[in-house]
Image (cartoon, rainbow, N blue to C red; front, side, top):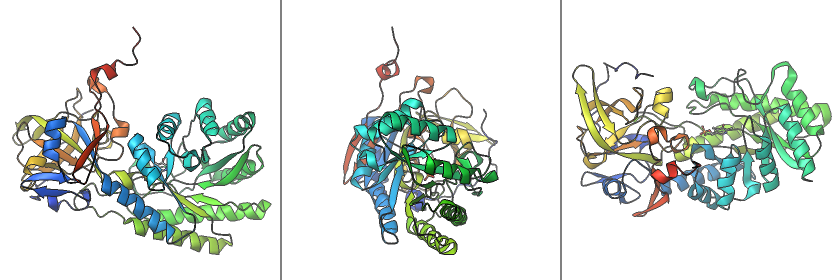
Amino acid sequence: MALPAPNKDAVADNRTTMELGKVLPKTANVIDGHLFVGGVDMVELARTQGTAMYVYDEEDLRDRMRQYRTAFDKRCENAGVAYASKAFLNKAMARIAKEEGMHLDVSGGGELAIALAAGFPADRIVVHGNSKTELELTEAIQAGAGRIVVDSITELERISRIAGELGKVQDVFLRITPGVEADTHDYIKTGCEDSKFGFTMRDDFAFESVLAAISAENVRLAGLHMHIGSQILKLEPFAEAIDVMIELFARVKEACGYEIDELDVGGGPGVAYQAEDVPAVIDEFARIVTDALNASCEKYGVAVPRVLCEPGRSIVATPGITLYTVGTIKNLPGIRKFVAVDGGMSDNIRTALYHASYEATVANKADQPRTQIVTIVGKHCESGDAVVLDGSLQEAQPGDVVCVFGTGAYCHSMSSNYNGNVRPAVVFVKDGQARVVSRRQTYADLMACDVD
Ligand SMILES: *Cc1c(COP(=O)(O)O)cnc(C)c1O
């Protein structure tokens, strides 16, 4: 896979770090030309602890969780906000979510195991996945997972059987694809008809499946679930999809008198990846969701269900940054300037995968304007291995510390050991303190599973 052609029209924006708008973590600050986050000098942290490194602004993380909870609590009773752990999870993150009163989405046995090991209450866990294994379902039911999101009739039957064998009744959601198109990248659209996820509305399949779930043994249909996609900046499709769902609630009530208690509206809104991006405000997202819910319930004459949502990106993307050290620089005048760092597609696959865009700064020149257009590339054996394509940056030198903003979601969780690269450490910073919450892997970790 090659890089996309250089953008000949790109012009350096001359912004300094503090002019990067909504991509900055809450506590970002520049002192004597150095970038600080959580009161910690990122240059010193990079130089003493080694790079590549993921850093999270803990105050920003907690603040976003609180914003979600407050925004829903003031508008509805008993709302649940589940952090979608696939965006980023380790034990420290699960503990923060627990402390902040969140629920937790997991997608399979591995994330469930991490959550349980961190002491996350099982009854606040929602289990996802379109192809959960027998073992994963058994683990979830045995652990007492609060909700399992059922993705197919085959799975409904499996859960019913396993719960029966374990002498339990499992609360479930049915995942419905409401047939609403969201304006986002094709790879992360999920609510349209042509999706591997969930029950289609076509040919009344979703309706029939809900009735099947209501009459299935050993499960209780607690609610319905929808997820229209990720990195959605225009929020109207949420209201459209909610209307489709509530109409289904009403049809079910009419057909068999069963009132479905809960509606899970899926992931949260998109975030700013570019300095000029204006992301949805969390409170605005909650307002649109709850207004749509109330309006549709009135329209179809059903009681307003308990609402759940499952934000991932809008909680962790912006508080998280990646620090790298510049290794080499290759200038091809008239073509491109490459700034090569000590990480790349192994710690951030999103740029190679879908040409995601990020803002970057030289953390030790953070007060200087970004006067150049460069492509920040990684150290991997792939031409497409880039972190930032045609982005503004200060004039960089080998040894400089480069900070890439907005990498808190779907970078660590999609990281790999490609080229035998060890996964970076994860460091939480707060009030001038840095704590390593996942240590950098060692070469021994790379061989830990090998059998001699
Ligand atoms: C990915 C995902 C989420 C989180 O989406 P964000 O855009 O990160 O908020 C929530 N629910 C489900 C089912 C998902 O697959």
